[in-house]
Amino acid sequence: MKKIRKLYEGKAKVIYETQEPDKLILEFKDTASAFDGLKKEVIKGKGNLNMEISSVIFEILGTQGIRTHYIKKLSNNEMLVWKAERFPVEVVVRNLAAGSLVKRYGIKEGTALAPPLVEFFMKSDELHDPMVCINHIKLLNLAPVDLIPKMEKIALKVNDILKKLFTEKGILLVDFKLEFGRLPDGSIAIIDEISPDSMRLWDKSTGEKLDKDRFRFDLGDLIEGYEKVLSKLKK
View 1: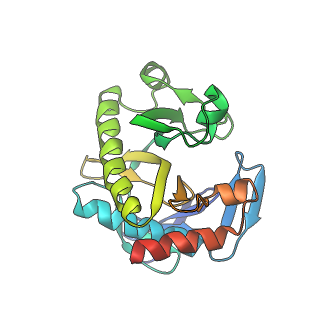
View 2: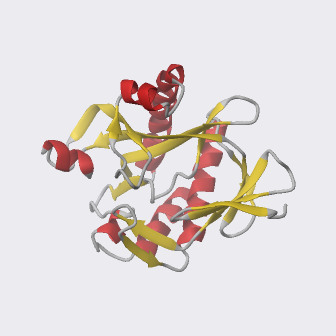
């Protein structure tokens, strides 16, 4: 599969057109960013780890009947994916209180949330990814409103699968975000990535944070944390 033309370059990934119009190459960069791009750093090996972790998770989800844009790995930092009509909405599932939830509502970090909390955010760095409800999504035409319940249902199913998976590996799945899009066959699928860049993962025994919070808040070497996650997933 050959790269024909660069379609988009973001903070952490580059998307390339291929000779097949319905397939794209997703390249993972070594760039780490936080706080809407205000904090940035190039960390060698990050792109490879995010691609590998995302591939493992996409493959597991595929065996459980979850549609994603993932097709296969191409190199140490590239995967082949289906082209999708992307919805600029992030679906966040929270099992434990952390991050913006703690800041917004004063809930103590680590508080268990039962049932899991599902939130929606408009994907916009300029606007700092504001939280939205279904009426905002309809008003701003961010996604077909009739698909929102389906996206929530899929996100909760993914949560069940990943929570069980990570628990077996000695990791707490604190929260994660998903992006959705429409594939060439018209089906709704998870797109982008599922990696420690888009999840909060804590070591079940020690409480060590193994995700991008290591970079956000200078909690330790990012690569070391991501390597621990990949190693546990492959056991």
